[in-house]
Length: 213
Image (cartoon, rainbow, N blue to C red):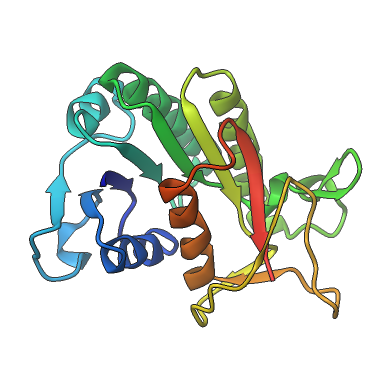
């Protein structure tokens, strides 16, 4: 399968890239800094595209089977919300123009329901430093829902950190998942497994789903 990965050297994107390559996919990587990619190899190509320009995105992704977006402007960006939403809008538009039908998106735990009708981002205890990212991710989900693409939006558990690749986890339909100790967590590696599983065998098209232990 030929897949474009936007943000292939980021926190989540790096784990997705490794999982894709380990599972035999051919990857076109759209990145800010190609020097941070793994050494050159036959199934990894660097693609050039402006994440805010739909025409540029369309040209880069045309001819591929699917696109995965792990785009993030970074917490240090003072205009994080605006840039995140603008990029997602351009990515959705660009993928639609390209003729590629499938778009998988790295979501955020803030979009999950802590209780019926109450998203995690709207709870009093939600960390202030993640608020802008969570709100931007929620708006990005709204952008996806207005599109005609075959999209999937995978939200991680509340705690997403480097760890083991176990291949053992639970999937949900939008409600926050917690373990026996009341913790909501998933490793970056197992998050990547869940995303590439969805790429290879679509089961959550045009909806949000989530992963946790």
